[in-house]
Length: 209
Ligand code: SF4
Ligand code: SF4
Ligand code: SF4
Image (cartoon, rainbow, N blue to C red; front, top):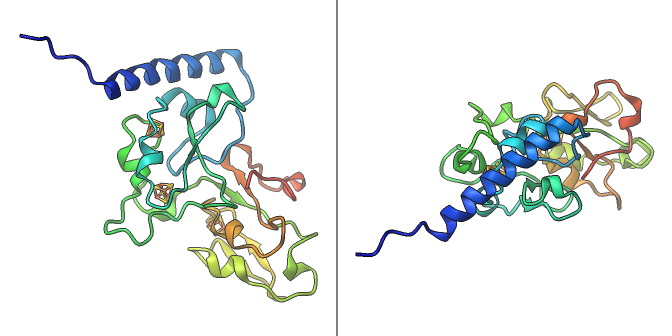
């Protein structure tokens, strides 16, 4: 009788686990700055995420909106890890699905993506408004980001001049505002949570998406 062989997927998972753990440990010990990518819901600080993610790609496969993409060789430390380019496809928080569960978190076999009780507890990053190019700050009525936000009136408020203001306490970092923004270059990029410093004026105009 033949011995049962481990499946290709199992082998890939084990290799990914070793790679992820090794790279993450090396990354921590080297004290290198973490690469700034917008990570899926439930990802914690970058170093911890890189240590825990085994690069299995299950979150990427399961996302019903194709929001997640695999990181390329731009940073070999994060090679194969999931991230978003929210200007192109934001995290839609699994809206329209039968269950309320966030599928990427549900499928993650490790602690890389940690559970949240409700979707409004997600903290991927914080949106910031580039007032130099935002239509609403430059004489044109626009509320596209406010309309797109899953938490209008909380994460994005409209001030007395009907201009958008982000409240970092509630912002999920989902990027739906970034995606909806009508200016050529987005006026409302997302700062990944690990890079966000409350009150930092250099945040204006920065962001990965
Ligand atoms: S929460 Fe849903 S839509 Fe957002 S990245 Fe995860 S699987 Fe995709
Ligand atoms: S499912 Fe979890 S371990 Fe697998 S690639 Fe996604 S974040 Fe990493
Ligand atoms: S302000 Fe933007 S990133 Fe924040 S919750 Fe609203 S749509 Fe999502």
